[in-house]
Length: 57
Image 1 (cartoon, one colour):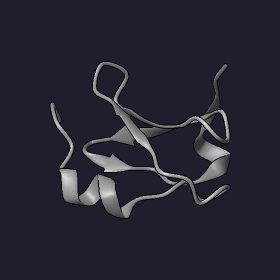
Image 2 (cartoon, one colour):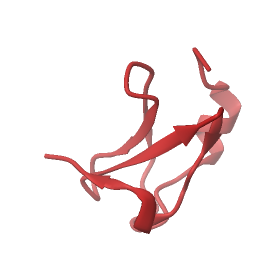
Image 3 (cartoon, one colour):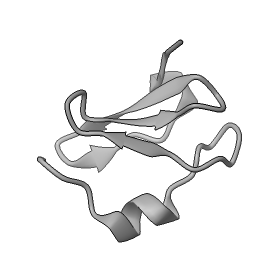
């Protein structure tokens, strides 16, 4: 997946904080700056589970 649908990105929020997410195309992740988490996108599907997210700075 080279790009994420803008409407889908608008609808997705961080499940931990409720904050908006930023799309990182290079890493194929959705970034929650407020939670310091990166949610993976696998086969074009965002995995919105805190247990699957990685911590970021």
